[in-house]
Image (cartoon, rainbow, N blue to C red):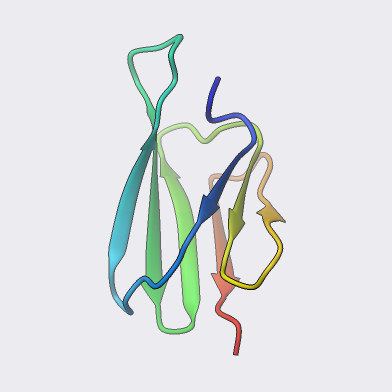
Length: 79
């Protein structure tokens, strides 16, 4: 499963914008769909449908943050 262990990286997303990304899953016809949304100084990462068992999210200048077992994660933009 290509999505297992994936890191979603968000760069220069405008306030109020939502970006969608698809992660292929060769063994299935359905891919994993993630959305990343910026709301002020927060960036929300969330999966439509099932989330991969292991995944993480990363913002510029920060280390990846694990979200294993979760369907969403919110990170604060660096000051």
